[in-house]
Amino acid sequence: MNWSQLFSSSIGKKIVMALTGIFLVVFLVVHCYVNANVFFANGEENFNRAAHFMGTNLLIRITEVGLFAGFILHIVQGYKLELQNRAKRKSRYAVTAGNKTSKWYSRSMAILGTLILLFLIIHLAHFWVPSRFGGLTEVEYDGQPYHNLYLEMKNIFAEPVVVAIYVLGCISLAWHLLHGVQSAAQTLGWTSKNYFPLIQSIGWAFSIIIPLIFALMPIFMYFGWELNTGA
View (cartoon, rainbow, N blue to C red):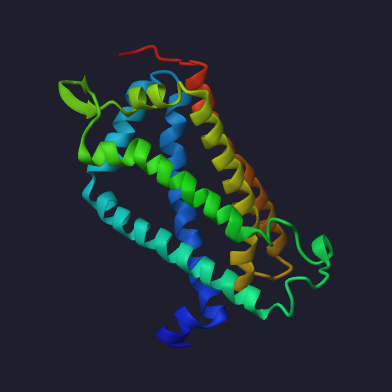
């Protein structure tokens, strides 16, 4: 398969979707680790320090460019696949087998992906834009200034409507991952009877645990369940 086929053929699009999806899964794990700092003692300082490292480390900043490229490519190829699949259907009014042949979330990936995209735009506007282009208050640790993203979270998640939007975004992410992880494994040929059940189990666990941690963060901040014991 040449480069042209990789981006134009059906299997090529699926391979691109799988590879970029795996890249984004790694990002979710790292992002989840940083966010999880808020649940523990000294969460404010630990979270701000971790966020500062992520925002100032040169290697991570370079990776950030690749991350945005991965997001865009994943989204574009996803929509292309959806349009291609619709074009193949004989009739939009034809009777389908429904859940007998596929789960509803596997047939709704474009809708779930769109909801996640809207959620991502809101999230970037709330945190990434002010942290990169200014507008955040600062706090000092050991005489060094840090962006106080923890305080920004407290202010943003003081609104119940915003908390609800984030929780719904995390639910959409969970359903998207539930299909995406297994679909990527099948596309890449990881379907051996010896380890595919393990991949399915890992996919289920990942699809529940990671979005749950993300969803708990705004809830945690809204109700003020802080465990800070330090500065």
